[in-house]
Image 1: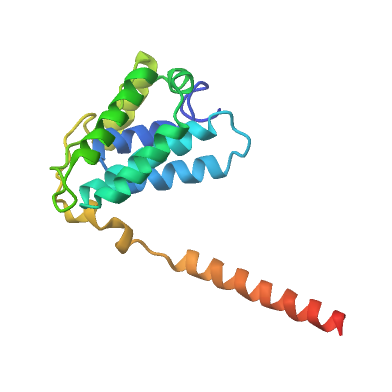
Image 2: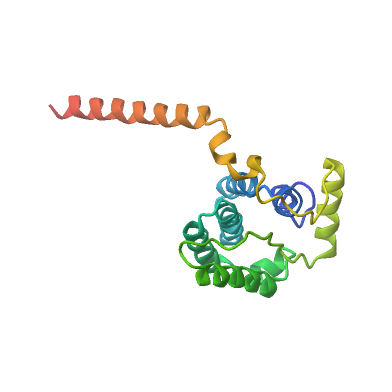
Length: 190
């Protein structure tokens, strides 16, 4: 693990800062997805994906998509392991319990009534990790543990406002390559 601290990847600290200071769960997703995809075979892959799923679940919940939030929290609970979370400086048991309680609250909600959104904090147990996060917050002018504005338009609709040009171009290039290979294979078969 490189970056901020030998024990914690820089992306993980950035994820926690976004999770607890800006409450920008879409950004949490972007940070953690890039990290786990660029570290194949990482022993914490399930933890990274599980934490990413919690963040995306909160994004959906805040937008009123209770069913999407339920599905992602269920998936996250299938990946999160107490021992991994403990090794990542969180209180593993408490983290899993908080996610489970959030899921239960959403499962108890009537289909036509989304429960009022409330922030969820991950319990950071390691004082060194907490220090790294609060220092990064201070450097960015953020406040660790600041509550979010659940109606903040920028947080509610971030997925629709991002620039997808590079993604669209990459998909088009991949499609063209597949088409070219099919033509080549078709020509050699005849």
